[in-house]
Image 1 (tube, rainbow, N blue to C red):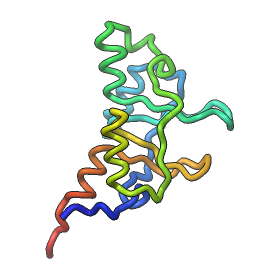
Image 2 (image 1 turned 90 degrees about the horizontal axis):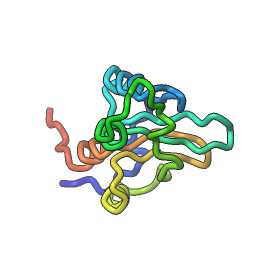
Image 3 (image 1 turned 90 degrees about the vertical axis):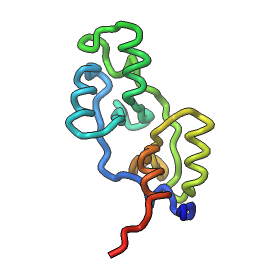
Image 4 (image 1 turned 180 degrees about the vertical axis):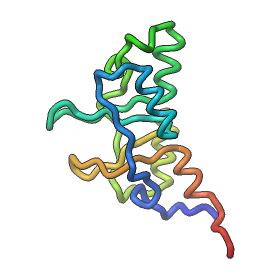
Length: 135
């Protein structure tokens, strides 16, 4: 049975992979591969700067499909900023609706200006509809 009562806090990943905006796309792709993630959060340059994100999808659509050089194209040329974010108490069904309505697949979980974690489509599916293991 689907666990729609779960919240963003319940399903988010708290170990967040980050990268600097001036890193190359090649560096970002390597980091994603090494860390086993499909997105990286872009660290703000200044305190009042919003977070950004770069995903596999961004790299395919905005670098590879356009024939750009991943070694000379920087993350800040491709990233999405500012981000759509959610509060930690948002229910799973609303996160699913957000993904459907916006076409995004990753959403940072924030409380005020504090980044708490990130929820991906994989996290949502795995946690909401995965069966509990029986002993």
